[in-house]
Image (cartoon, one colour):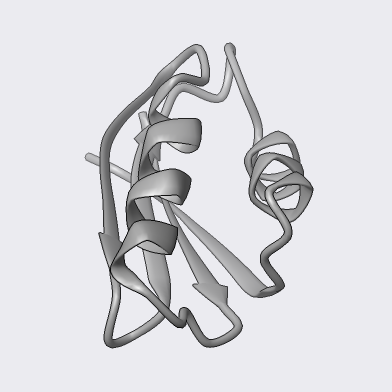
Length: 76
């Protein structure tokens, strides 16, 4: 299991947060999704065998949101 932190461009409304959280949560192998509205970040755990940061970044970008950076780290 890995943890991903995606830095977004500025989020403008709470419904944006919910939209992103729902879309990322529906991806196979993803869990513990949390969107931090004030920090414009998405945090999620994912299984590398089932998805990738690139796939999740594309999901967010396809919703119309800007992704600035993606960081991944191993969970022990």
